[in-house]
Length: 467
Image (cartoon, rainbow, N blue to C red; front, top):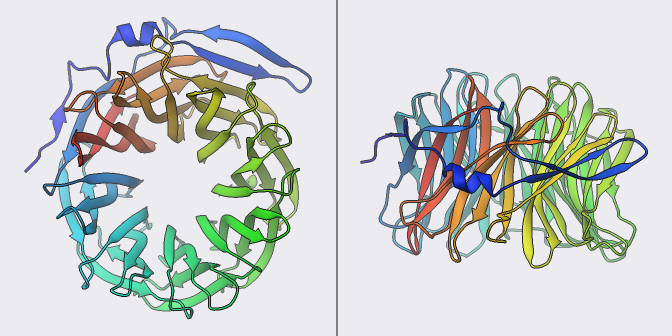
């Protein structure tokens, strides 16, 4: 049994590691790109500290976190996957207090005792916990699995969706509307023209109210989902055609499952664009995608739509080296700013962590490229959360030793200046550790990730960090 571990005197990586790190903040105006603004951690900026951390290790094999959510009762939910016997994988769901006391945790294993994998978690306004992912049947094909737990951890219902194609169906994201209805997006197998994008809507009691699909000539899938205050569902994903490769696809469905609009983003090469993230607020609908550029390999692509479906703008980001720039996550703040976390092959072969900020009008405010400069080793951002003051926290991993990866989080100001960075080396040292998801609430940043104990054993980790 594991208990939370306090870290009142332990900082996530010590100051000598910060001293060798600087962040290049690329500040843009509407007419010029200003390069070479090198900033270090400010003497006046508060350093982040690890307040407590909880290692979730329920089995003799691996546990990894994939997503987290805040609950209306001030608690936190972490979801991931655990490997019990080296072959079969179960879903785990755990709820924690603000002090990182584990309130409850439950594994979920399907009746066939096969591979069950969580992809996302959400909490409805009543405090119920919603999980989606994929559960593989005896025939080897996956079904979309959706689980609902009460706030106290009781499994209210599991729902398994097997499409008409009786092939593989994959669940990727989940959200809830104001009434507690559950929306799930992913991909469903088709008998005719390849897999289709699908959205499922369940009632609070688990009844399937409707399913809606987007069926193009080849493969289509839904990757991320957002629900607005009017209970409309917005999905971003990919749509494949023989002519243009993959396009980044954005669709709006109303509360009854009627498709209101669909837009495909195709890049300059008519090649491959993949939807990665979506968000909706009072400013409209925002999506992030990867896009093959002309002479620039892969770029970050961001687009803004009105809720009625009019595309207001699209913006591309290409790093100075013109190599691969890939978005992994996106977040929006109350002012309408868009933050994107990802990776950039800025100087091959050194992978650099990429942090971007656009305002609501599409002006790129700054771009940061971060890596372990003292050892010339790579870094990558998996997650981002706004700071509430115009800046943001970006988290993922950094390679510190020749074979070791640390869980890492960086904080940037509203102007893109690097303020503070923290790295957490796992108990095995020199192993593979990373942060996968972030939330900010109550004056703290909360992070979910994993640390390697001994290959192939990992444990999920939940961090509480002072900002």
